[in-house]
Length: 191
Image (cartoon, rainbow, N blue to C red; front, side, top):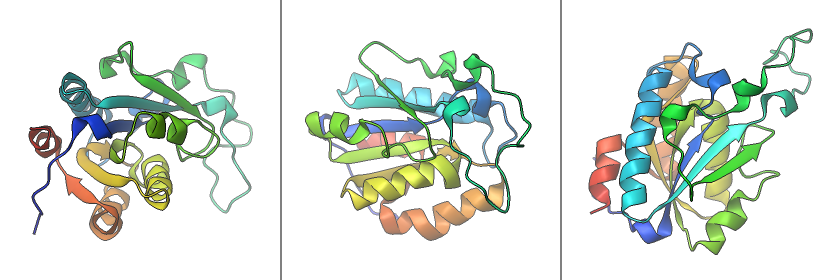
């Protein structure tokens, strides 16, 4: 059963992961990239209006570390991504005053000033979404959980490379780390 909850916008940040040209257009499931972006913009607009912090995280694709692994995320002979691939899509509606964090790995905390920026603003709650559920979003969630942030996961503002990957994370992991809600439920919780 879903617990009732509310959000204090003055202590809350929306953190959206990798809504950028090189990622949003990929085949995603269960939600398409444009649907995720649309919901992210709705959340950002509503939360910004109530005084919450808005954070857009992007990965610098040409600086992303690809260690040796059984399955490579990138072909060894792949050409560099165009510069635009690492830029946030304009449909997010990034505004002056929003934070933009650039990362070089899956998670948004390691090697960035994200924690410092959140702590100096008195943030203790993160509303989290983006692409991909079980890569950048989950890595960021685990680091936030380890740092004792309260977490709210926005299911319809998050997607992955395959529906089963998304569903597993949202059904078997995120409910143990925080609250799983829809875009509308998060907006309603702002009061």
